[in-house]
Image (cartoon, rainbow, N blue to C red; front, side, top):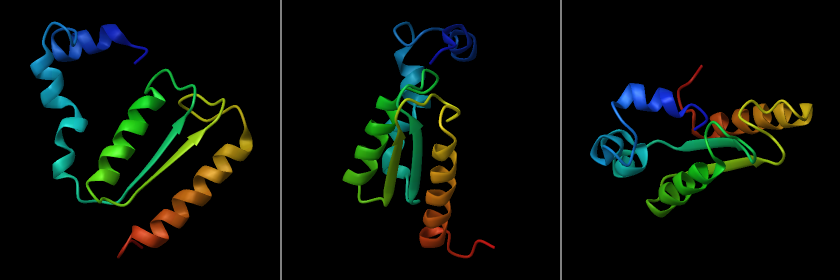
Length: 106
């Protein structure tokens, strides 16, 4: 994350100081509670949420048998603003995902 002082403020310390708090709050430690198909989108160069976290999440959900799709956009950061086509691809894939898994959504 690119805002380390914010984490320190929000959680009362850094991960190496209070690992039990970070583990309790981190979604990766609670994947066994996920039952919803999950669509993950990340930029390869995202500094806010490192793409590695998305890969780990995708692998974990896949291992648990949860339908999951990971889209990684090259040379993009958190906001996907470097290539206008990436935004269009993102929306197209989201709509396809909702068509397949958004049962009952209007």
